[in-house]
Amino acid sequence: MKPIKLDDIKKVSRPYSVPEGYFEDLPLKIQTRIQSERKESWIRTPAFKLAFAIAAMLTIVMSIVFVNQSVNPEDLLADIPEEELLAYANLMQFEESDIFSAFEGSIEEIDFFDADGLDNLELEDSTLDDLLLEYDLSDEYL
Amino acid sequence: MQNKIVPKIKPSAIFSIKGLITYQRINVEELIIQKIRDEETRNYGFNLLVREYQERVYWHVRKMVVDHDDADDLVQEIFVKVWKNLGSFREDAKLYTWIYRIATNECLTFLKKKKRKYFVSIGDVTKELSEKLDEDVNISGDEVQLKLQKALLKLPDKQRVVFNMKYFDEMKFAEIAEVTGTSVGALKASYHHAVKKIEEFLVDD
Image (cartoon, rainbow over all chains, first blue to last red; front, side, top):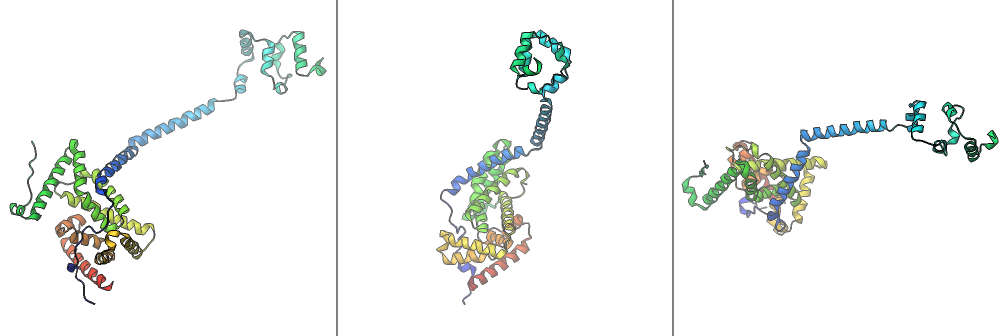
């Protein structure tokens, strides 16, 4: 076969097809890419990483404190001396019925024999009768 | 005080067309460097740089990776790197050889990754690129050019990049040596071998 010399071939330095208007749009594409890389590189700076780490730590610490603070209200009441509770009830001028209504729905959970503090409550007979009837305890106590 | 731009060519060269182009190129390059040097005009200088070199860089890359989308992505990446490294540009080097160096390294890294990523052999990549050549409407109609481009794909990547710079871009061996960091002697030998191989491939096909 006849040898082919490179010099015999016409030199075409731009042999492939390129989309129309490609080189007009390219500078803008490059600028846009540089802008987005700048934003990303700011996020990658040690100062940003440190600030982010501190913020994350603070959030975790505050969450732990908040979770620990939201304890059961009954536990909180248990820590308050009985005299202070009664003094508070007097101050707010609660009626005995108000106090009992606070236990509505959970009356079965109250152990009256252990509720020494209730001994000091002075209830009128009519109120007591009403309460015993309301909580269906008349058979037991009347 | 304003820096005076001094052309780096002999005055006699100005009278030839090639000399005129070279003179113009050096002037533009000097202007770009001047603008880049100043913090206030750096953006404008970079914009000039992109407009001046985008086509040359694109074609340098496209001939290596063949596919337009790959070339487009790589060209953008190359100019982002140029922007990031403007501060490290040594003014004793030519701006365009510095850009070519970045572009060449990006191309070679891309091709290496391509082979590694898909666990494919060099032969398979050549086949894939060769198929892309067949799909290109611009070249598929010209049988000789298509043959030549396919023959080029059979060269090792480093040899192909040297061949492209010498044959298509008509760069001097000294300039290619600046880009590749290889000695002029080694480049001459590499180019000579590449030409021989291409001529053999053309006959075989």
